[in-house]
Length: 205
Image (cartoon, helix red, strand yellow):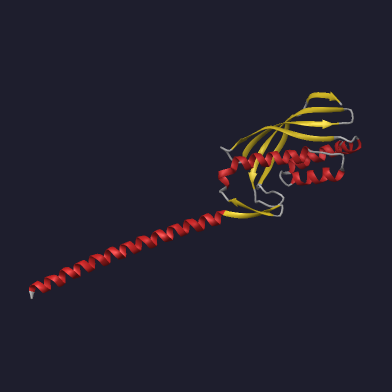
């Protein structure tokens, strides 16, 4: 009789041990399943689909700090290209300047007004002048906020008889603002001014 009781106790202990192992294994399995599901959902949320030229393109989202320097430099580059790229067409000039002014504060508007008062844009149109800007380098200091920048580039001014190349060095600050269709990077140039703008060479056409 005691032998049967010991066998029952032993069997009960084995069943209890097996049940505990089974429960622990199930908990671990469920935990791993939940973890991998969360990781998969997170990866899926990081992916966005962009419609580009009628084709769906997959892209990966990232934290702004990951690409901060790239976005700052591209904002500065875009502003200068829009502000200084001119054609003998009033609509082109107005369109580019309007886009550029969304990216900067009142200092850019003052510079535009000064050039307009000096009949600079009228002379571009009447003289069939084309102007483009070439970027040499852009230096941005991200150690302090607002971020300071210095732009180094060249202007190429094509007239009927000559092509002039001028140096262009500007500087200012960059402040974070809300992103929008008119300001996709979400930065604003402040205190923008020109340090250098002089002839490098003039070639006859």
